[in-house]
Image 1 (cartoon, rainbow, N blue to C red):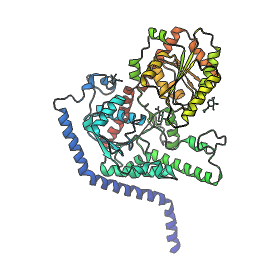
Image 2 (image 1 turned 90 degrees about the vertical axis):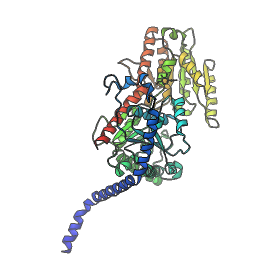
Image 3 (image 1 turned 45 degrees about the horizontal axis):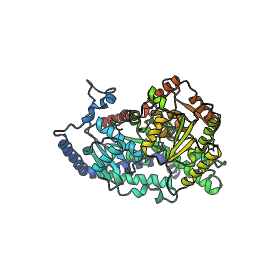
Length: 532
Ligand SMILES: *[C@@H]1O[C@H](CO)[C@@H](O)[C@H](O)[C@H]1NC(C)=O
Ligand SMILES: *[C@@H]1O[C@H](CO)[C@@H](O)[C@H](O)[C@H]1NC(C)=O
Ligand SMILES: *[C@@H]1O[C@H](CO)[C@@H](O)[C@H](O)[C@H]1NC(C)=O
């Protein structure tokens, strides 16, 4: 009797993980349900307020005066009828989880561009931004975004939901186990977000994958998405622990000894957890091939679907450069044999490699007009950058190219524009740069890229366009020097054609293409939401 009971008990052991997972599901669902019912009135109030504002704005105004200026060009390729962009009547709330939205950097540009595209496609939708910045004034922000990024937001259907527990995602809150701490902290922050407003679609734009998975558990019916700029833990990091050459960054070789072993195991476990979390997200978008590669490895989707981890490049100000800089046979005559490198003066940008390469090219050049090198970059005050640029100047002197080399620190945009107009080659010396927006700007301005044969410049930017090359890849100073010479000695006609091709290829990075691709992904989420 007793033995058979014991046996029966033993037989249930394999069920324990299943049962506990089931318990977690039931529990989170109950919490989600209670969040939803507690927040129902507040949600209704927000919706009502926006309806009212919308009606006020709509009276006598054309809500979308800019329909004429090119928007329908993007839209009509897909769902438009009789030439009019299809403006869907879907009216849900899209929640953007972006705790640091005042930072004004590249990540914010993506956020605002995504919101602007969403608002145009679904004018009745409400875009809610969960932020920890409490001092945001909506109308000031709308005009800042307009001035800074040239992105037009519809003010009345944009709401800010202010979070007060942002410290839970700050690295400084967790002296040890930072990754895990921040990730669990983001769930805590997301919980606060849902207490304030439960959206119909939830999108993370800052890399808080744990918050998105948590949303999925609380509200299984809410479609979720993540725009990933950078994986929380990268496979490079995991590998660097075993590295003994010391050449792989700050964690290099840290995987030895007892402490190192512990760290290694912690990172491995975290990477597994991160992978599991990532697989809960419905729509995953990456900002580059580099990020996509890492996300594919870490999140290992069950079904190899081509739609997992789509790449949508962040919008670059390509249109503006194309408008401001001419690439014509006349402008071609005004260009000097000048190599341009736009990058912060920091060691990893490897200006030294470019100096040595240029020196080889310069001293071997037999052309009448000697080539020039222009280095433009920012120098962060009171940092080792200042010493770094001093060393670079010395190196230029030693290489006997100081007369041909110009260093420009913290150049205003107009000065950059002038050099983009005048130079012939854009270069980049950094190993495995994730992207390098300077290369895109150079291409858009008609410069021919000679870039490091690695990272984003190789995978995303200097790739053949319509089957023909638009620039050159190099690794050693010899290869760089040869590539510079190759561009300089190209037949004028061919060189001009290459400039035009390069410029045309930057179409991939425009705001218009970003908007089109963003809407494709949003459309999936809206479909999911409507069918649930
Ligand atoms: C993607 O995001 C990372 C982190 O912000 C950044 O370093 C990289 O340049 C971005 N890639 C693109 C294509 O903008
Ligand atoms: C701002 O965007 C509009 C429309 O997208 C474009 O026509 C205009 O040239 C842009 N202005 C600048 C300064 O980039
Ligand atoms: C710069 O490039 C050279 C040649 O590829 C390489 O040996 C060196 O380590 C690089 N320096 C830095 C700081 O990346």
